[in-house]
Image (cartoon, rainbow, N blue to C red; front, side, top):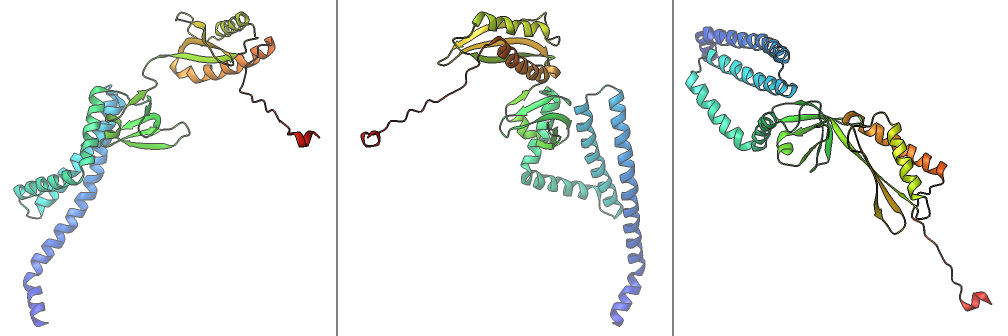
Length: 278
């Protein structure tokens, strides 16, 4: 006990100095964390005002945040007497180990850079990722993940590597989208009148681009129906509204004109044996 007290008394200044450094390090960390958030906020607003694309703003902001926190930890470590070269060597070794353990993370980072460079999609686009059936409106593109908002308001975070290594359909990349509707009518129905009705519906719909190609045609002569086709161009953001409305109007107009839309049917014939007939 006396030895412990003597050692404590001899090392009391060192212990006090160490505790003071720990307290200062904690205070510096929390203060600098607020400063980092403030700097990142200013950086985000400045890039937005400068006209940077939204996906670039979110990616650079997340990258800057990681870099500033790494610099903060580096600075705090040197305050404890750790040499800068030792910290750099430690970080390099840790980086190698982390890179080996988190190869997927590095591929996601590389994927984020590729997305920003080649711009297969941007914030606000509606995309479909084929491998995992992920689809939605792009909310933000960060270092490792791209955030999608689905039609039913669910948030989906897709790794950037998944998006760069698979087929992506950018639904809203173009301003206009071709409307392609197929409908079958019976062989007994008036083909000419059916085509006239489709053309009338197209002319009546104001959201269809009248200065672009419009087609009404016989697409196929099927076993049980004559398949008609309708093609026209609409604004991409109005595609589904126009398609749903036309589908309803085609059905109602054909019913009024006596044009039948056939559907699969099955005739069942019951055969009776000789005993049952008697």
